[in-house]
Length: 454
Ligand SMILES: *Cc1c(COP(=O)(O)O)cnc(C)c1O
Image (cartoon, rainbow, N blue to C red; front, side):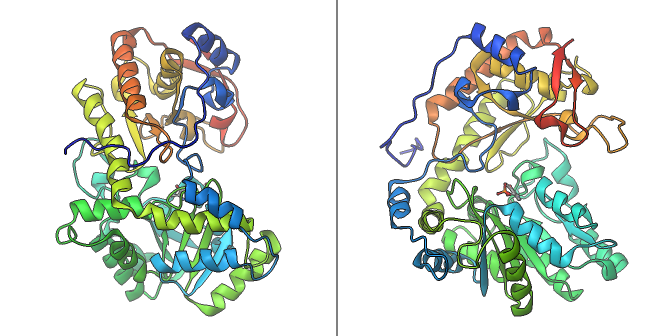
C-alpha cells in the first residue's frame, strides 16, 4: 500500500471550537495582530510550536499512574534513566524541567566572559543561555543551510573546514563544540551521521568535548536512515546510539522527541563535571533523581522514549511535512526545501514581495492565515530578530512563517485544510497589507508586541 496512514487510533479527543471568519477577524484585532495574544481555544489548528503540545499514548497515560513521587531514589527515575541510556549511552543522566534548564547548567560550568561556543546553529534558548553566561555563540552551518531552495539532503551539517579553522584560531577561548539535531533554527534540517562523527573527531583533535543538543534525535535518525548511503538497513535505535556514542554529553528538551508535555535532561560522561552539574541542579531544579520533574513525568518520558523510535511513527511524521510542502510547492508558494522534520517553513518575504521587510510580511501572512482558516503559525523573521539591543531595526536574514506540527495530534484532513487555506491566500495575497508595531518591550518583542495594520 502506498498511502501512509496515521499509525494510531484515537481513544480520547479534544473537541475543536469552530469559529467564523468574522469572529476571527475581531479576535486577532483585539489581540493587536499578535498570534501569541490569542486564547488557544479560539484557534482551530494550532501550529505555533511542536514543543510539549503532542498527544501522549495510552501506555504513557498508564505510566503516569505508575509514577512514584519519592523525593530520593524513586523507581520512576531509574526507569527514565535506563530508557535514556538505552538510546544514549552516557554515564550520567541529570533530569531537568525543560531543555533550557539543562543548557543553563551546562553553560554555568562551561560558559563565561571571553569564551565562544560553536555549533551548526544554536537554538534561541541555547544562545540565550550562552550569552547570559557572558560567552558568545557562533553558527557554523554549511552554506547550503542558508539557501531555502537548495536540495542538499543534510542542510543542518556543520561546515567542517570552518570548524577546524575556527578551533585553530580561537582554540583557547572554546570550552566545547555543539551540534543541534535536527537544526531547529535552520528549518528543522537534519545532520548526517558522517557529519556528527567528523565534528566529534575535529572537536577531540583540538581537545574539546563534543555536546549534542538532541531535541529531535529520532527525526534526525529517520533522515539518516532514509537519506545517508549505507544506513538503509539499520534500525533507528542503532543509528541513534551511533550518533550519541561519539559525544561527551547532550542536552535535551523532552517536549520534543520524548513525547513529553514537559521535561528535559543533561547527560555527561565526565564524573567531575557531572558532580558539578548535580550541585547546580540541586540549587536550581531539585534532587538528582527527579530534577525539575514529578515522578509521573519521568515515567511518561521513559515510555515515550520507547515509542519515538518506531519507524511507522517516524515515516508518518516526516510524510506530514512532505505532503504539505509538495502541495504548496506545486501551487508556486516558496517553501523551505527539502521538507524538514517538525515544521513547514513558508518564505513570506519571497511570496508577499509587495510588503517590505520592515512592514513584516511574515506577520502579515500569519495574521491572514488565522483570519481565513483559524490556523495559528509563527513569524520567524524581522519581528523576531529585527530589533537590536541599541534600539535600531534592520530586516532579518529571511522572513519566514513556520507551521510546526505537534506530534500525533492532527490528521491528514487537517493537512488538506491547511493546503486549502493557502489556496485561498494565493487568490488574495496581493491585497494583503503590512503592519506597524505600536507597542513593544525592549527584549524578545515578538511574544508581546502590538501591531496595527497599514
Ligand atoms: C525546544 C528546544 C530547546 C529548549 O528546550 P525547552 O524544553 O523549550 O526549554 C533547545 N534546543 C532546541 C533545538 C529546541 O528545539
